[in-house]
Image (cartoon, rainbow over all chains, first blue to last red; front, side):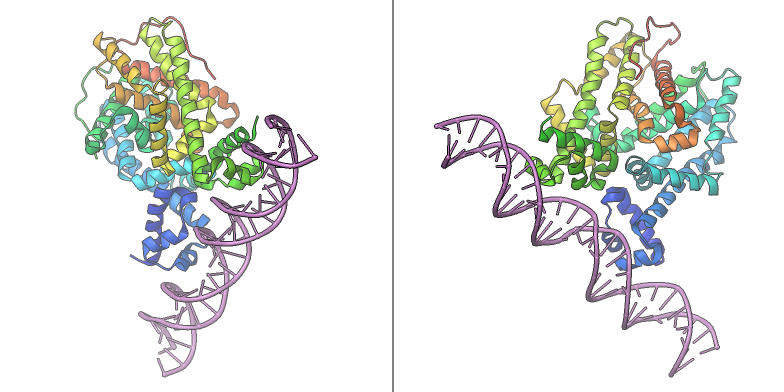
Length: 220
Length: 220
DNA sequence: AAATGGTTTAACCGTATCGTTAAACCGATT
DNA sequence: AATCGGTTTAACGATACGGTTAAACCATTT
């Protein structure tokens, strides 16, 4: 791994832990086992390094979601399975890219303008990985065939993202309030994922009862 | 308003905008029209001031939710109305205490330990405002009468919080991805709130169809 | 082996920012 | 009017932190 890569991955770690403003260039240098001046040699300024980190994080998450879905969705016939896949892939992406998710979450609240900039750049340069409209039109189709109730596709997407993100965003509070013993977090995550799928399916399907063929989507 | 109060409310504003680490004591002083030394006179250190701010924020949000619900829930007979009320009051609390919500959101990701500490303190000192168990037992009752499906009450609560918080946490992204024109945000918020209620009702009720008596819960 | 150019280093600079301090202010008490 | 305690101020450390620089290093080319 060359120096620039070492810096970038150390930066992702530190920014994930401390947030944009809590991060010190010195700490990134130490964690990358690199002289501090190297950060400025490759990235010019903290601001620019952070933006590169943010773009990388957002890109990785989006790619994970999109790739996971596009690889499997065509093999499916039952729209119920497709919805399940969409929900599961969101959850997987957030739980598997936890550093990237943390960066995104903290940036959305402390520097939303940066997030907007990063999102716009990715949408421009990689339109294939950023495709909410695909989901929207899929939902529209299912509404047309009366398989889905009269729901707002965009709102539903926001809700899916919200339910999937919340636990990662609010770990301390959810654990405290809901008496989750952190010992078997794995177990809890599985239940959480299943619960989201269940709520969404019953929330949007006209007739949720018929069991769908398989249980797709990886679980951690 | 005395000096200490002036400092605290200025601090809430600044911490909400800039986050814990992005906030400068000087800026709080200026916004409170107070000499910087006064911050240290009343709060000793930035760390302690922040913790007071965090506790205040968490308390206000919790109180808003709890008060709103307890005032109206007893007048209701239909459990559908009660669920609607619970969801609506969460949404109202987050959208009305936007500074406090921002503080909570940014702290959860950049300093979760502080949030945990604050939450524990409130749970100890004000057990009445922190009552997730009430919601849980309400859900359990409705499950017993077969009015609710076999859902996990704790997971459902987390989902309610998640769907209600996500838009405030992720404004830039949701707006960008979902083509929401910020012009009529009010309109969007109403739709968002209604959509969450709809999804939850259909997601957890055994038979969601019978229309419920009134549309309770304030809308902004 | 000299030169070239990308890479790396130690040492340093300036300023932003947390926090301190000693004195002044000022209303209430005696 | 003297004093006393809570409050406020201007000025001042100390240092953490972002960023710079000039020289050294070193692999490759000529």
